[in-house]
Image 1 (tube, rainbow, N blue to C red):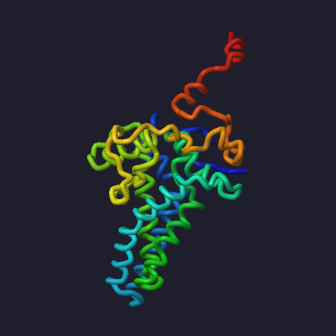
Image 2: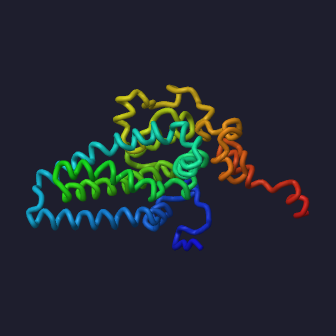
Image 3: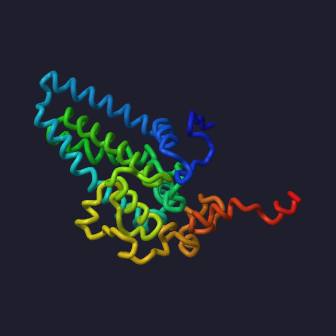
Length: 270
């Protein structure tokens, strides 16, 4: 039996119908966010204790934190573009469930809060592997925990901004508004660009940034990432785990279809 507390029940939540207060409540009650914040507190406490006991220098710890801040956007750009938008994960029975959970479901229904947050079991190992070794090389174990602390805090920021980008709300700050516009183009116009989520420097450097939808043609695979009925015939793993398969690719049309009663239900209600 799976126990769920507070906001996170079996009910579906759609960000296009929520306000900022609803989002804040959901965000703070999500188990992965609580785990990240707890880990950040423990890591910061160890780093501070190590510094006070002369186990690391301020310069070494500062270098670990700065290196993590600079490296983090590149790590997630790389993951998003070349792993999550690759076409090999659905082909393997072992990786298809992970790909479905962390990316296919999100693109299939971009406003569903249930699948917007990254899964803890996939996200945390990546954050740790990307940050702790760099910090360790610069300042030993205190540097590793300092880098890990910064990595999970950046992940918390990333998750919150990502939620705001899908929220039915117009951000007041210009830089958040721009990020939202670029990310919405990634989800609703053409998925082959604007991979950065919270930082688009690497999109600019690798030529994948497009500022206006007129700059790219509309993609036919923006909602299914190329996993369609023909692909499912050869690689059925994702389809087998997807309710109501095959379903309408466009999530807006799909929600309208599900909201309409079937012919038999309509007759029975008469």
